[in-house]
Length: 269
Image 1: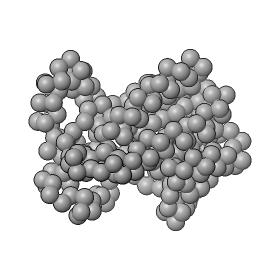
Image 2: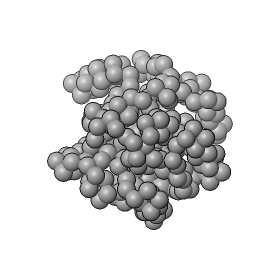
Image 3: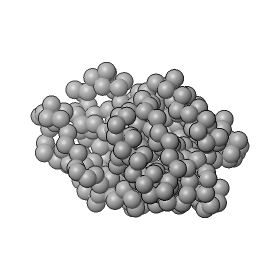
Image 4: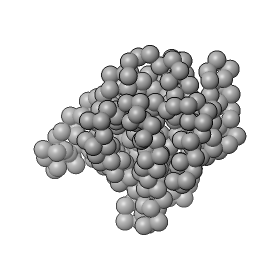
């Protein structure tokens, strides 16, 4: 797909605020038609109205991506509203904090349902239409999809699963014309900053409350990252890692796990 997004249809999950909303803004500025999805109906409608006031054509549907049935309904809604689907941005998800041995199986299951299986549900529902259009699947991962860190609970596990799923999609469906891109950003700036529940941080060092669990990386402006994601779609990039220098850490970790662990420990907390 070229840079001409006029009348193309872009579906973004987790789109009522933050990076998801910025991605929707970036595509809408290029005259794409937008479908917003998130769990909160009120905040979703507020986000949709903001885009409409800027002249965008927008539909929205409250959706819990942990439900396969709701994801199927969401994709059908996009097709009923606009007659096509060209881009699926799997952005819905959340991070976590906690010591690994104190993270319960139920907490692992909950985060995997949202961060990983939510992507599976949406992608399976949309794949047929996206393949027909030779469109795009954009999966929003994290630096934690490539390198785990301390005190992030079940979060790295859920994002590693997402990274593997994305690669398999590329290998199986890329030859059929589907563009699949994994986005691995460091901490994305939030306004206002997110406040984590006190019980989630109980017993953890103060650094755990910081973005990225205290990773030594500058917060990424969501509007800037959204523009980079649109350009990545236009160029059909396979991965987008921000900051790019993190790729060196990933490569060193593969060559020497001991060195990789040392560097991760130095760069976090």
